[in-house]
Amino acid sequence: MNIIMANGIELAWDSFGDADAETFLLISGLGTQMIRWSVGFCEGLAGRGYRAIRFDNRDAGCSTHFTAWAAPDFGALVSALMAGRRPDVPYTLNDMATDAIGLLDALGIARVHVVGRSMGGMIAQVLASEHADRVVSLTSIMSSTGNPALPQAASDVMAMMMRPAPDPAVDPDGFLRMRLPFARRIAGTAYPFDEDVHRALLLEEARRCYDTDGTARQIAAMAVAGDRRARLATIKAPTLVIHGTDDPLIPPACGHDTAVSIPSSIYRPIEGMGHDLPPELEQTVIDAICDVAKKGSHQAVSR
Image (tube, rainbow, N blue to C red; front, side, top):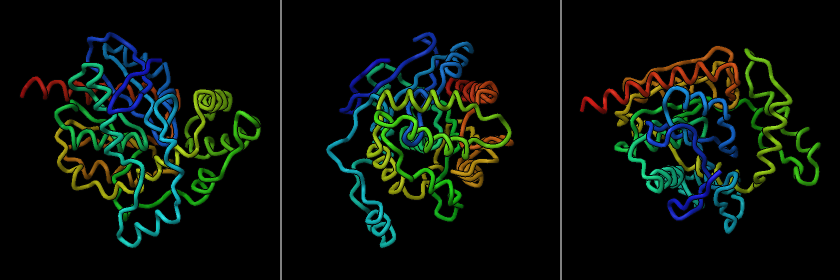
């Protein structure tokens, strides 16, 4: 793992593959860390001749945490939004996208293939719409557009996600008793849930950094992002949208809406996939994002 200054903060990152190769920038989701992009996934991209860079978003993992800001008052946040007011939040998805641009600048990388999952897909969409000159291709996985008419997460899933868990440093068993059922609930039905793998991942993330207030600040950034469809309509980069048909956290309609909103995008629903990327699907996803990357590279050379 490396630490670099970008956009005025510290970002933790690492890299797989030849430093001179075309690069995939992998962006993680809400409250999760760069290690959610597994070593096998990153090495799979490197084996296809690409460089893969993963990093911790602000307020996650080993990157800068905005501890000067308290956790948002979600009641006040919702009230302000319902009244048509923009609440005061520590940062926005645009700021998080600018972090990614700062990382690329610090590493001397001009253009990348951007891949984001969940909240990371939203950040990737912002990159492709607001920083089009830096994005060769876009892949948005298990993400959404901010369209207020879209269905929301299943009520039990939201309750499980928002329920406080014990501090893993004090009560790791209690922490796992709360978080493992949530991981199982959102994982989908087509592939076996490997409890040992998820347990190890949750504990490794907790060891790197456990910050529920940071996750709350990221939720606030998503809450104020609004409807992005008008901006998505301006995206020119070849785009792939991947979504699981069994996703209970960000329902499949959200992925379809993303694909409809981005001109000429390819929509790839994956039967039985939930809000997770199981090892059995990693090669399928690698093949798909490499295909759209080739299309983007060809388009860039043709211009």
